[in-house]
Length: 530
Ligand code: FAD
Ligand code: SIN
Image 1 (cartoon, rainbow, N blue to C red):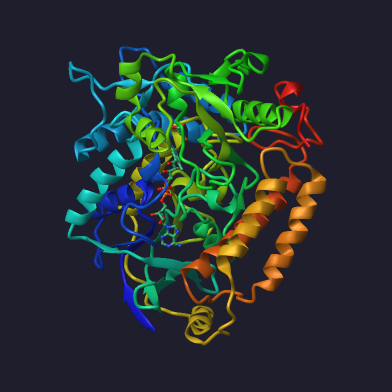
Image 2 (image 1 turned 135 degrees about the vertical axis):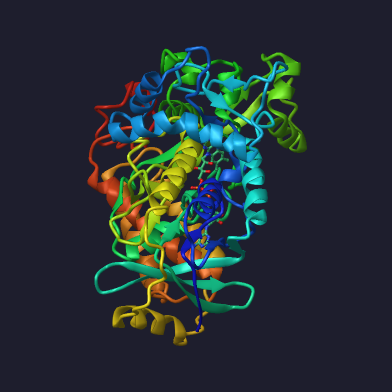
């Protein structure tokens, strides 16, 4: 097998991976350069589709403070957050946002040149920066991708998927195996620093706001290498994804910022319902709004509710949400006059590879940043727009940490690593799997049994069904192509979510157990749960 050496390898080109590549390339002594590996095109990621914005606790005339942001984050996270991590990230947000501005990230400004801030659910004040109104992710990814392409210390390899980590007998990570989709070959990469920035896993659910690539690959890689994985039961379901037909599965997001600007949730008869559930109504924490919509859908036997944005001033609405309004127009909905059909969809993974703010995991030489990581910042439920902040804050800290590390490429390859390499150089059976159908089957199981409202009975049923899918897929590690690798990874992630959901018997944050509802805000949210 072909092999190469790099001082650091970053897997994934969303906000976390792109920013980490730039910072590491600029700050560290890199005898063998940085590799940025990504399984699709550079920048194709969840990050690219982020709408609402990024939290910045920056100096805006003393309106905001890190204390206030920390309190909001911990309240949304049902106090399961790591308080020291929340404080740390909140406090460095100012430096990181200013660094992004220096790099050329074009946050929206008013006519006086001051940055504009918006409000989202469960934030006490307007503290969210945005780009192009509702295209924040694209703005960040485009600006960072441009700089990455220009940096001669960074090698970009697209259409290549990381498929296995190389750990030695001392449980240290010494590199990885990749599958290059263009050549159809497996390759070995040795490095002292393997950085997972592989994002989330929304694709394990039937309905999701996440693009096709969000298959939880980094979780499978780290789990298989023996890293600690935690909090997998905490999946955030966004309340308002565009529900144009009961069968459209990757659902376009209708940003929470639309509710932040005043839009109201209504049923098909035009009746508002959020005041029955929470005094903050549409701006209650996400888990509460999601369960309320779900409950109303069950009660009224419909597959969606509606978001009425037409009450917002027309000029403001179109200026603030150009991407959303265009997407709706393309689907025959004029948001200035018609309500938008919305329903919940899997959106964000709070759990993941246990990592410090610097990305350090339980395995030496392996780092995890962004959505794939679980630093304890989000607790049981993420506060809106805190994710992009975590991506860049942790990339920033990781680059700082690595600037003091020895980034010499490993020279000693032990028998454990040789055995792994052998697995990938040996032939496998050419059994023909219908991966599209298998993925769909898994996504249905997860949506129906491990979704918004859970119970022991349904979780056990899911576990049994996932076990059967596992047994029927005769690829232990090496697969034939990217689709098979993604399905392999989705099976691992589905199994880990289900086990974690079974183990946590209480309802808390985004994890709702119908068979134990004592922490749920109002019993009304579960009236029609089955
Ligand atoms: P991603 O951006 O998902 O990037 C992961 C990268 O890894 C991709 O390039 C992928 O192709 C690559 N990859 C994955 N596996 C492999 C592999 N095995 N080998 C090689 N490459 C691999 N958060 C906010 O804070 N504010 C928002 O406004 C907001 N809006 C959102 C809107 C939508 C529609 C969605 C889906 C999410 C939103 N979020 C938002 C959440 C946020 O966008 C994500 O949590 C964040 O962007 C994750 O960034 P990341 O860099 O960790 O991962
Ligand atoms: C949104 O714009 O509603 C998404 C924000 C987020 O997920 O943080």
